[in-house]
Amino acid sequence: NNALGGSLPTNVGKMPSLVTLRIHENDFMGRLPDFTDAVYLEEAHFDENYFLGNIPTFGSNRLRSLYLGRNEFTGSLPESIGRISKLEDLYVQRNKLNGTIPSSISKLTALENIDLSFNKLSGSIPDAISGLMQLRELVLNDNRLTGGLPDIGKMKRLEIARLNNNLLSGNLELSLSVGSLNYLTEFAIQNNDLKGVVPEFVCDLLLDFLASDCW
Image (cartoon, rainbow, N blue to C red; front, top):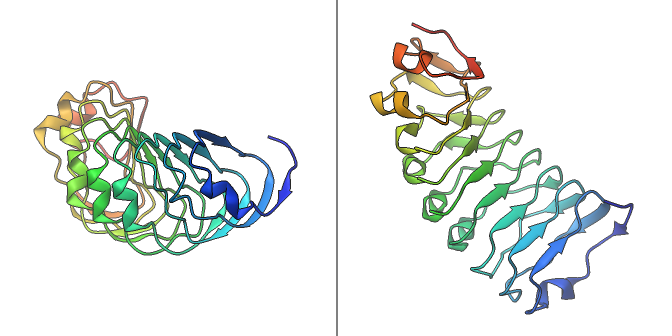
């Protein structure tokens, strides 16, 4: 949180003993170096800078927090993201990403928070994302995602689901298990092409925010 600028030296990504890197809220620009050799990296905060180009490869299987939001990244979310097996927080919101959400995201079984909002992502939401049992926040709003809603009923710890402002379509079919999501406080699906209304068992939840029509 300073006014540091310029590009990040490529040798930063080659530091095998690097554990924590926090350079968020600065004026860094240019491309991020490859972090394949930073095998002990646990936290990486690059958010709120001016980084551009593709998201680089991260080689650490200890990485828990990856913050890339509010930059100028382009291209797609790399399939290699699924190899970061201990990842808990993935924030890539407000960039210029396109392409689809990689199916490898389903391998991130420790994931608690994912925010890919305000990009240009397209295609359907991978069905396997429903198997992310630790997920607390699923934030995919303001993209160009198509297909149906994911089955969130298995995500027993889910607190926030923002899927609004996309191109999701089809009948609004929610499993009965959604009614037992006791931690759910926000469920936003407005401004899509979904048909139907939210069933009563969801409307009965004590939500702080529900953006859709109830039965």
